[in-house]
Image 1 (tube, rainbow, N blue to C red):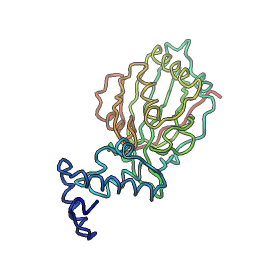
Image 2 (tube, rainbow, N blue to C red):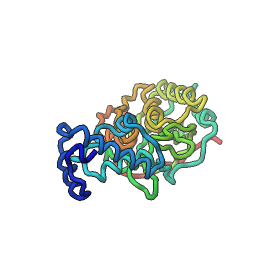
Image 3 (cartoon, rainbow, N blue to C red):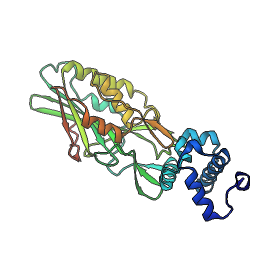
Image 4 (cartoon, rainbow, N blue to C red):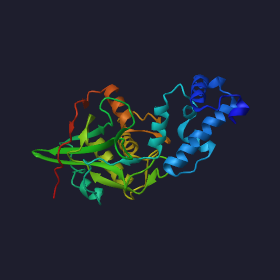
Length: 290
């Protein structure tokens, strides 16, 4: 193939020629493009023991996969992310086997004189950045986490539940993006940005009912379509909270993620019933009725 393209067989000369050629993808001869594509496919086969077609290569990684005006290490970082296990951070709590039972702690029948709050917490992979992940060592990537806090105060009695949606195990963007889902207790979980909505009794009751209905049967966790951020945004927006749901791409997929969502919350316009924190901290503890 190299000879057909008319380029050097010397590895060092070839590297320089290819680097010069791929500075502008529009001018890339088709035979050189084929050479780069096969190099990427061979790398994936060798490093991750995964077979991938040319169509899948572009589906998972986009046109950038053959562009050398992007630093080479960046391209291989993208491939590495696509085949890495997504790390579940040590802040995650125990499984909540019956969220509906916990939510029954809240008064939703005679609560017109109570105060109500729902908080959306985002633990970004890198604080104050839309970076989708960062390396935590080995074949693990931290993609952050999004979770919800619910609080009600009636007189002198306060009740609080903090929870988030998780996968059973560590998903891999390309090979296993979907796993069974579960709910975990996220009290004292770290976060980088949060927004709190002070709700009327009607909006609070609607939120509780929407959450119960959504988790009646725990759905599968899906990195692209039903992850921790997706579900949290969905539930908040059932009561008109106006949470941004911007879809962004990452190697091997696309969806709502904590990096971008955190930046969206930092920049969103607050209404009078909303407050925001942009200081890295830990969520408070649960206060249950039993």
